[in-house]
Image 1 (cartoon, rainbow, N blue to C red):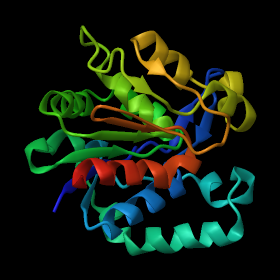
Image 2 (image 1 turned 90 degrees about the horizontal axis):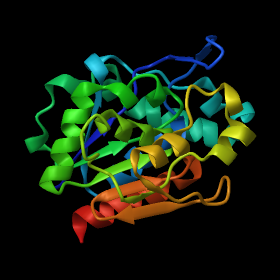
Image 3 (image 1 turned 180 degrees about the vertical axis):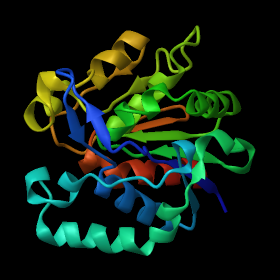
Length: 232
């Protein structure tokens, strides 16, 4: 049975370009829908955050203001409650032994921009996964975690096809030009072959062992792509 390490941001505040702080956290659907699909496929999923801190759910991801209807919100809340013990006591990224895992999964929400994008311990794990041929799946702003490895020359993900939360989506439903940095622009600058689908459409890009999803609408498809990679 394949063993997946789901690394979730522990940030609860995002410092915007104008230096103001904005409450943030992981996006409920991206954790709940992805985790549920992986478990239902028979995979074992273990959670980790920087320093082993309990992650915070972004309140917007459970509200109509965040584009989430009441029925979906309740469904995500129920599932997150089911895995509450795992959320309460995640592994610390710094202490993870990747040899015991078969893949890494990185859900989003804006929070990864605040910690995962610059986490040196995560960079170690992502570099090892790429070297060992283990799948890495990243979703929405979770794709910014790949930037943690960009001090390496060459960048481990240079030239690979990928997607993530786009500038158009950031303008339409994110923080626009107040965002700390553009995920799309930074990945392009680092050397990624970034592919932007139409805003809010389900888009997944697979290039070798790298699996990336564009937005929350791509949560289930991203999880399914990892399931295929681990079971085919």
